[in-house]
Amino acid sequence: MATVTLDNLRKEFDNGRIVAVDDVSMQVDDGEFITVVGPSGCGKSTTLRMLAGLETPTGGSIHIGDEDVTDVHARKRDVAMVFQNYALYPHKTVEQNMAFGLRMSTDLSKEARRERVRETAEMMGIEDLLDDKPDELSGGQKQRVALGRAIVREPDVFLFDEPLSNLDAKLRTTMRTEIQRLQNELGITAIYVTHDQEEAMTMGDRIAILDDGELQQLGAPKDVYNNPTNEFVGGFVGSPSMNFLDVAVEDSGNAVRLTQTEGPLDYQLSGDVAARVREADVSEFTLGIRPEDVEVVDGGPNAVETTVGVVEPIGSDNYLHLDVGTDFIARVDSDVEPASGDVIQITFDQSDLHLFDGVTGESLL
Ligand code: ATP
Image (cartoon, rainbow, N blue to C red; front, side):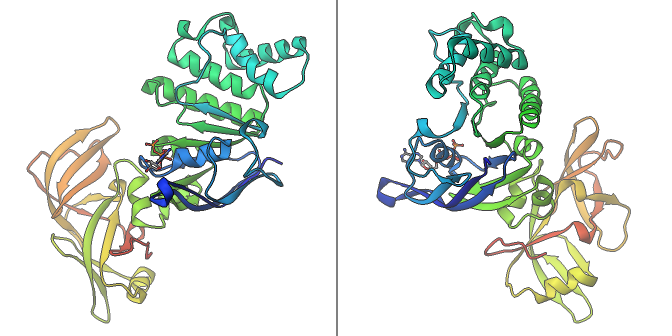
């Protein structure tokens, strides 16, 4: 079983002045594809490098299956890592590059090694490149070779460190699908680091979001998207980003109202949502509204008046840049096309609202 278990995994640099990974715990199931995402410097690569054995943890443990590999040398771990810069040997041919890892990690005969390299090359569609050297290949081909070199070893666990960031947008999309196909076919356990939240959302069975060395949330992409555990996750996942407004809560006994501290929003909550907000023992609130949850209306309760700034058509939809006391983006159907400068009214369903503690950022709904 290639489960991977991180237990309070920690990495400090500079005698503890930098905490790159701050007691991260998570379990990756056998055959699961986990994406790890977060802003630059959040500790993604350091986590992955500890899993690969390229960095020694300051604390905590790593298990692969039942085996504690925390102190096991990189070469003795049954993991393969695919890097952003491909890390191919420039003077070796594609075939030699792919066979090299195999020679180091198995005792197959030369003929059997050749056969396995050929099979893998066919699976990756690079069988015609076997005699080429890396500098004769395009970026996409190099990344296929790097993937093939990892796959040919049949490791228990695959680690990917931003493997597609050097490819152009179109190729990146193709390679994403390719990696997902391979992962499904081979049933591999994979941990995939990226700074691209869209990549993380589309590829992961589950997505782990890191910030400042700490694991913020681990869950299925849809769950994380719909129920972000805090303001950071709400803002990090989704594009364009969630809109945030500072609000005060006014409880008049019958109703609970959210009134924007510096802007026009005045929203009356009802039922369950009102009850939960009433119970929250919090002094400052931040309201979160996703651009796609905004509706343009013609008056009605809870309508907010706003002035249209830039209108950005993206084909299927329009992005409306609005002034709601602060910059605010609405994603609406392409047939909703107000002109810049128009005053319009917008609203949102209360079931789509996110409300966070304005101080800690924790989700309250
Ligand atoms: P990026 O997306 O920019 O690669 P990351 O999320 O992968 O970022 P890490 O590379 O893991 O982040 O770095 C986490 C933190 O640890 C950063 O503050 C970084 O400066 C620091 N760090 C990483 N490696 C070292 C090192 N060898 N010595 C000192 N500090 C380090």
